[in-house]
Image (cartoon, rainbow over all chains, first blue to last red; front, side):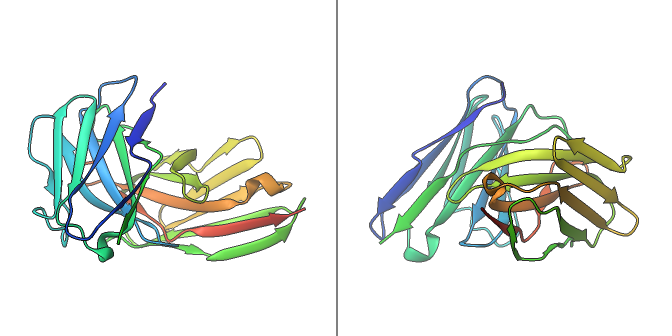
Length: 116
Length: 113
């Protein structure tokens, strides 16, 4: 149990376009979902936390207009990278939890974004 | 601000060796500490989770210890195998009322046959 999927697993887009990444909890209801970014050979950095039905909470330094997060249902959160630029190229990983303050986070397999 | 550091950054060992990966954190106000494995281009696999009140956890050939007061954790891998080759990340869950995981810098392990 506790499986989280991401789609797509890999995406290449042109500079200036927008890209949407989906994160789904397949067998549980995720009250809270998290989005992380990982640069090559670096660790994961939390970008934002989203609770179902409310606005996401962004970490300091993360542009909320650049990285739009929607958590419209208990099984789906989306991250939209708007007007993507090459520096947005990265590995994006989501995680999901049932929602208690200390509940375990279950991680998705990640999405590799390359902006040309 | 919590900072999590892992030493060494990279490690190469021959198959069969026992090895220790280190993780240190600056703020001891943590709820738990978790060790993950990440294969290249893949997501995270949780290996061990230690609650702040615990000293160690074991799973198969893996043993993780936690010394919260000194801000340190170690991951011990016994009888390493080529299949253990991956990046190992430690992460602390902050005791701040919400589930903020702060990740370490990672250790890239290569076990050669």
